[in-house]
Length: 402
Length: 157
Image (cartoon, rainbow over all chains, first blue to last red; front, side, top):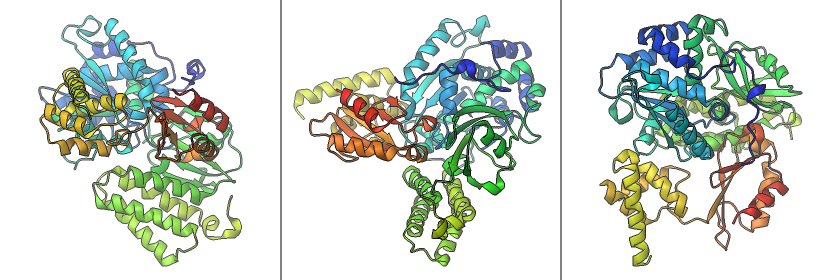
């Protein structure tokens, strides 16, 4: 492998990269008990780091309240959003945080089994993670009677995906685990009631789980010190594109887009795509916006474009992505994305009339409300925001990029 | 397919079912194992998996065709996939593509005559800060340029 992961010591950040001693969180969790864990978590205000931002404490409480005979913790490592690679860093450099987070989750909701759903593209990590789990088993951090506590059993298994972006959606992920096509389910019922094999299941993003050991060992109040009122804590941002220092950065929520551009030494920036292909594209005039659930939300993907980039070409790449990755189950998403891509091609060749474009914008709105899952609901975001924010460049050939 | 080949494949699939279990939730793991070894899942293999898991062969076919990394058609001994998503596109993917197609004498979706390499595209590999990237079987290579990509291809047996 030509990948080097020696960067861990250089990383620093307020929460996840703040230093953690393995099992510290688990020991604290055992000491304070289930109810206090849930209270700390609720107090921390932690929301799902995959992008949707559902309060983690609520998810855990609903599952903990069930008295089903089996429950599951699923770690969603199906990181497929273009421009996102933070989970790669967490799994390779900070597996102790993810594993401890899963063990704490297991003890809190009463699950004995955890599954890491690793995307097929990350198969090269599989043996590394398997070896890591074997080591954890030997050290009694997972397995039977964890850390010597009687009846505290929790086992973790890794399952691979096979190249389907939609499987990052939690119900599609569960379908895939059950051996079906990764097509999202109708909700309700939610996985917290009816998840893997029909049992209550917590599906958490890798980064959400990695935040847990810190919150439990240092407290919800401490976590809340960072970020904004509605977006507590910090976030891992995967920053790529036109800048001198791409990579994964941990910054508190509420950081301005312009501040972030300074940190990664971006020059001549024209646009920033926040939230990956399914996110929104922000022009220069809005660089004072903040990265937070209540403003420009993201699961971590930040893509930077400088003045030389052709935004229509970028949009075309995004739409091609969605046409391929739509699972095809519901009509708005299956047909809608194809129609939007057709529209982009027509703009490219100069055939698109304004009424046609307005029709496509109407279609975008239909897709946002009528699609079954987040894929089709969010795929028109970049279409709408790029056409709105860069209309001069796109429709006035005099100011066209390369 | 010769009868003894069929028997061998059946025995192998039976073994996989023993390892992963005969529940429906084992299906993807079994298919992934067959794909890893044979680079595709033949009609016969699909039928055998269906028989051992007690589901209809159409169910197996339907699952295979859903996932980009599973295939019902034969492929080369090695599968090379070049990431075509936006950041690799911005960092010089096209030059790599041109060099690779010229060197191998095939276009995307095709297999070399000696059956050594099948060339494909893939969506985001999660290497956006290190593009352009490609994945050879399960190994990822990053920071590609035309020369580096050709060297990697030449080393594939």
